[in-house]
Image (cartoon, rainbow, N blue to C red; front, side):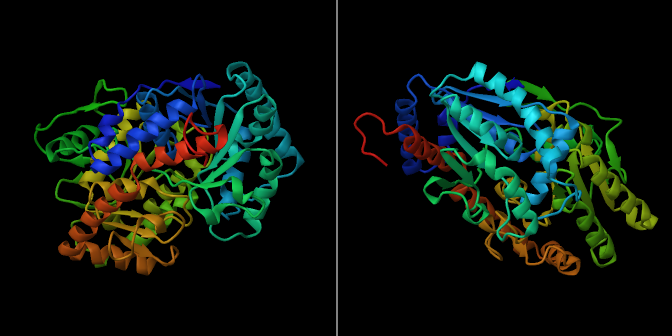
Amino acid sequence: MHEVQIEPMPLERLASVLSAERQIVLADSAVRARALLRGLTVWNVNSTASGGGVAEMLQALLAYTRGAGISTRWLVLEGSRDFFTVTKRIHNLVHGSSGDGGPTGHAERAVYEQVLAGQLEELRALIPPGDVVILHDPQTAGLATGLRDHGAHVVWRCHVGRDTSNEATDRAWSFLHPYLAHVEATIFSRRTYAPAWVDQDRLWVIPPSLDPFSTKNRALPSSDVQAALRAAGIVAFPGRGGHLDFVRRDGTRGAVRVHPDLALTGGPLPETARAVLQVSRWDRLKDMAGVLTGIADHLDHLPEDVHLLLVGPDASGVSDDPEAAEVLAECQAIWGSRPAHQRRRLHLCSLPMDDVDENAHLVNALQHFASTVVQKSLVEGFGLTVTEPMWKARPVVASAVGGIQDQIVDGESGLLLDDPYDLDSFASMVRRVLSDAGLATRLGDAGRERVREQFLGDRHLRQYVDLLERLLGTAAGDPGV
């Protein structure tokens, strides 16, 4: 297990994009939290420090929490390949997918419990009784009972789920239920994700949020977008204009490196390209292969300047996802099966993960560059890859699944695809946005405002303070919850 260092960020930075009323509520939430946590620390435990929305969200939320004068720490568990194979299987099952089709029996429990037993000993040595521990996702569920026995307040947050149960979800919850029987609260992104056995009095619905000042989401001038994508070799912009430097999460400066060996299938996009972009982990549930097939099958009906760009992390840099390399290889095989005139307009890119801030800056540049962003997930817990381009006023076409439905109002702040397996309708929606500049602008502008209204960090932090009041009692002089 290792600790992720968190540099504090002042709440005033987040407050600068809020209304006066929300600024007051945010400041009050900080006062309440400090009163509740006198001498206590809030610990977050998950399975990776980079390569996914959970890690990115923790970076921002915990930085603001520290900036508010609240003690918080972030630990990342370590496990064997067999452990992460089991937890990826559970992850897929929670989504209602059979995944690799493997078992979840006694042998898998033994692998899971053996790894977590060692992690638990480390945690018990670090965490004093009375502190609050927030465990994230299936990888950490097996720590809950031991930490409760140790005297910690334990919350389990599940960032994934499915609106309707099936045999796969039943298997997943059957595996996880014994470990979660005694947690004091569970958090889901949607109420429908919670299995029937969750105590409704201990169920909290807290959607994720976005930090508008993170490396991935801050505003970028077009010259800097071009400079970053030129240096990385993703888009063939001419010239030498713009700046390569960017602001890291800790406030220091970094710079985009030249990437002559970037894993880019299909070569760089021409400077005049209109990019249809999907940024996701190489995960079958994100259906990168379906996006590639759907656009390729209809490429001849799209304007000649339209190119598809599928972007994911370097598969070797995501420690908790053993399927990533397989999914990437499947997409590369699909690309290779297409005729040459299509391959020139289809691109797969694996961004380096050795510098997570550079990775975030490149994703930011890509989302600013894109003409349309898609997220054709088969299932989705929430989908910060939808929230991010909405904040950048990019028109988004996405599947009407999971938390994406909470973000996009169909026809107002984006377009929703009712059936993510319907590749014809998917391509038609993309073509509609690309052929109607007015529609694209309206969807992008409305999407940005929807994120401002509902999916920034002040709402998220306030909900966590409400939860702490329930766990720890009320601050002195305040009424109970």
